[in-house]
Length: 113
Length: 117
Image (cartoon, each protein chain N blue to C red):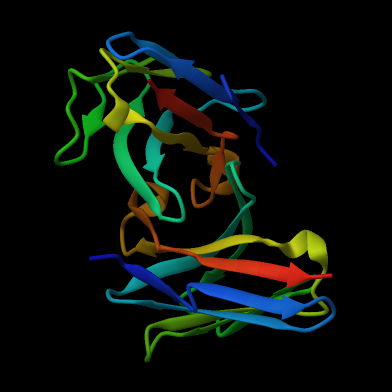
């Protein structure tokens, strides 16, 4: 089964609103990463949070990690039409490095102008 | 960040032909390259891991004779879909870690949409 499971699978909001996506995983991890994929393109790394961190910010992105619940959330504030994309969490299992990254099924985010 | 260039971005071929997809690391040395397959609105499925100068490691269920991977240099890895059939139609993406970022993050090519008629 997938190591990372995002929810919701799809999310549609109005421009300017905040978008929150969640990711749950099963095994212990070194870090958790979020990637973005525009339609028909490759993935772009957004942010990495380590297992000993609880929250991290990067511009309009805020990521939280709760290792006790094995879950993470990605918050995009003040969304823009250009944020429309699919967002994937990826977990780096203990001892895996990039070799051990496992991707979830993704959340498809649509920002309505 | 590191740049991975993938070509072609789109290819349409006849059933039975072979298609080669190239991934180049432009500004770093990619000792390892990961090849993924992605179906519409689905996650990435790791097909194989290629390492420069050695044989690729294939995931369970991936036919190594059908998906030939070559990683002859530190900047180039290729995936050849041999005797392609319509069921091979998919989006193929490569990615590589950059040792300058402690190999934790992956840098992706832009993907290749393969359509087999």
